[in-house]
Length: 485
Image (cartoon, rainbow, N blue to C red; front, side, top):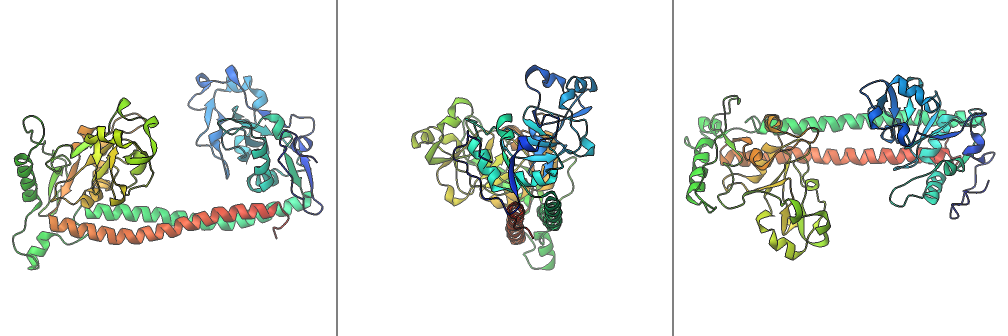
């Protein structure tokens, strides 16, 4: 068959021996509408959605692996009756017509009678010609499908395909017995592959739990010997500067070296009534108490018109955004502003080895340390620059802020429905366990030693998961070029 005339650059590859190409319109179910786009306009709107009822599948329900229900919406039975022509049957195929065009899934018994919205097209095919699993495998894996969709794509700002173009899409057809064999072989190989992927996911989860356990132990005095324990065994001098004495010294220096505007205001002490007991020689302190005695040692980024997305440039001083703050690690996502703009925002400047805390998003108070390679930079709104006192290691603060005990205590301060947020005052009041300086050093060294092993293993796991994705695609490609054994 010839390619769609709207796709002049599209050329079909040679079909394997005894295979043929037919269009979707030629393999549609007999006496039924082969392709149907979900309801448009006023026939289905937000006001129709309810907490439970008849499932309504959206484009978010379609993945590279099939249909998922956790993103489904629901309508009433009465509304479903009004939309009777859009109800699904077992074996129907759902095809994404917008965004990531080409995702497809097969309707199983659990979704019979469900509905679909206008971002999805329903295909109802003649199963005597084409098995649904053969078709979905073809859509996900055949290069000619990707080439065709790219050629006919008509979306100026986003992908899109219409009913006519889908009906004209060429489908390679093997004899029906061969389709059964290919589907069985794909499922056999995918079963083995998924078992390996599941094992890798399990390793990932275990590494994540181990990382959390290391940080928790570090902040509870269980990761390395404490200064008090060393003192009792004679491995340290009997006297050492406790966390309490360290905090008192830091507060004295802050008071003495105050350079801010107006009269010095003592940072509020933490409320320790409900806090768990600390190891001997440790004390509780707030983020504000542990800040360096200089202006803007704790500051958030500029809001409003002072810094907008349109100010970003391809080069120049950096802007540290929420995207840069990983789970304890710096993520190198670049955004820049001009030198002139940077000079106007010096209050918000951030330096190498500063701790930057996310005031918005998941896992508050998520933080990272600014690396030396960043150079001149400022923080953006919702990113808080925190420079600790010289007697508090930035790496220890980063460990503490990303630990489960601190996150659980901070959870009570988080506000914002569905969008967790901490303001500057709340971040200043976060309570941190403070050990002696020598103990901070040992804690950081041991955390880095253990997590370096975790990072190596995570790299290996990630590489193997990527390899599994490529292997899955390779299996499908071979299936539709006649090469699958």
